[in-house]
Amino acid sequence: MKRSQWKWLGVSLGFSSLVLVLVLYFTVDETTIEYIQRLNPWYLALALAAHVVALGFWALRLKTMSRSLGYKVGFFHCLNAVFANLLIAAITPSQAGGEPVRVHELYRVGVRLGDATGVVIMERILDGAVLVVISMVTMLFLGQQWQSIAPGMTVFIYISWILIAGLVFFFMYSVRKPGVLKGLLHRFSLWLDRRKQRRNVEKLNALLDRIDTEVDNFHGSLSRFVSRGISGLIWGTFCTVMFWCIEFAIASVILVGLGSQPFFIESFIAQIIITLVMMVPLTPGGSGVAEVVATSLYGIFVNSAVLGVFVLLWRMIFYYFNIILGLAASVGILRREVVRTGTDRRRNP
Image 1 (cartoon, helix red, strand yellow):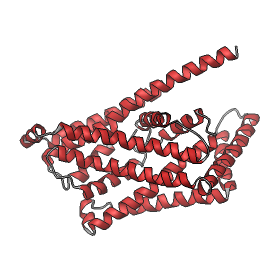
Image 2 (image 1 turned 120 degrees about the horizontal axis):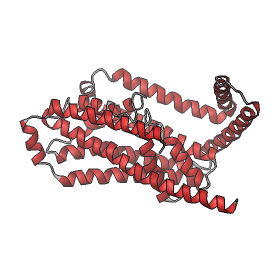
Image 3 (image 1 turned 60 degrees about the vertical axis):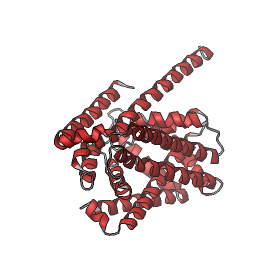
Image 4 (image 1 turned 180 degrees about the vertical axis):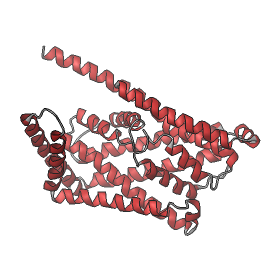
């Protein structure tokens, strides 16, 4: 990683560690030791294994959606891309930095840039749609009780639904009218160019031409998803449902391992709210924010003595373990790129 990325990783880790220390300080009491002594390590192993399985479904989604567009991408290549994506997501606001990593890794195995972008954006559209459906189902199960679990969050959830629906409709419209997307990107590029002190007309024109080409590729990939690539959308939807259901169930597994009730439905609502909040670009990787929101929500129905330990274990799996996986995958990608660059130089001295 670049030096600036290491800096943001340090900032992200610092935020998370500080908040976790504060959470533990205000929640640990004499009964916390009893919960820790009753901690069942097999449930923690199950939670960790479930997280890896969920990431496997994410990789399978990448593979099947790419295959529906006519590309053969290996499962383990997709899995490595998902792992590397986790590291960048941990150091970027709203975890948005992982998308370029997945696009790059698909492009490296022969997927056209526009198609790779289409696959990754379609992933996010499926994520949004599935999250909305899961939240509606869990809220239906709880009835009016869910408002007592997440007081004051009703408006936030409804606004999130509207924003997600708006993004979905925008991309559906861009399939029919690619000129609209081209126009937006052109205006954004021209705005950036005007901010430069030294303007290069030739480079600007080349950039605009490249934008037109890639938007056409992107439009083609989305169109193929709707027509010939419908199998990719079906498999992608299935993998997305499995991914989120497994990820949201892990918190309940941790609670059972600590000797607490699982609170499955309540935990699903809490996890959905946490996921939506972490999409807001507040801190790198949502560090600090995730811990505070999780403590506030789970504190409503989880014993305070076990709350801090639960949040710590939950973040160890979803944040610190992700960083370890991301670092390992990124080292592998770096080695591959070094070998690739050396090979290209020998071929073209």
